[in-house]
Image 1 (cartoon, one colour):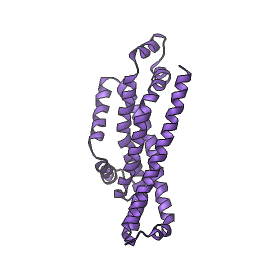
Image 2 (cartoon, helix red, strand yellow; image 1 turned 180 degrees about the horizontal axis):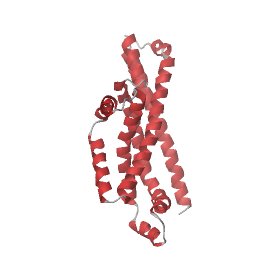
Image 3 (cartoon, one colour; image 1 turned 135 degrees about the vertical axis):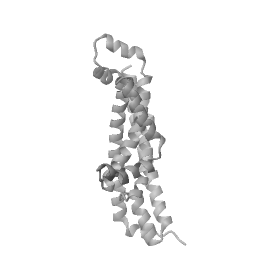
Length: 222
């Protein structure tokens, strides 16, 4: 057997389309997950004991169950509560909620790492909770949460492959279909592995660039 690159070239439009869906789901899902995770972290930090316990339980359940099970529940379980979703919206919702649970813990750890004296100083000068978050917590926690946030973004990127299970037309589903139709599993899986590797490398380099810029900015303003 030989590696037949023509199989890939002949299906290039479909592969590009699948790659676009993968990137779309990853970027939108990561942004929504980070936003949701931030608000969950704020709620746990400033919302009182009851809200902290309730949100903590939800986060524990989401982090303690496989993403595959969660996406099945969103897609196949939705109709039981009157929520019938197409594969793509179901995939976006699933990956956003799954990622939000992890991002909430990242941001909560960042909040906890900020010295209490800084927060108390803000309260002493009359800052509201919103102003404390914007002017004290966010600037100080940014550098702390950037590396784990980047790692989480990479993990969510890889989790997009799971969405092929519910027939989301992303790259894994596209290449799996090509491999089955053309009996070219090695070619299809090689392209899939190369795609994710390149995407991870690009993400890592961009993250390192942002971290370097923020470090210089912090040093300049120290």
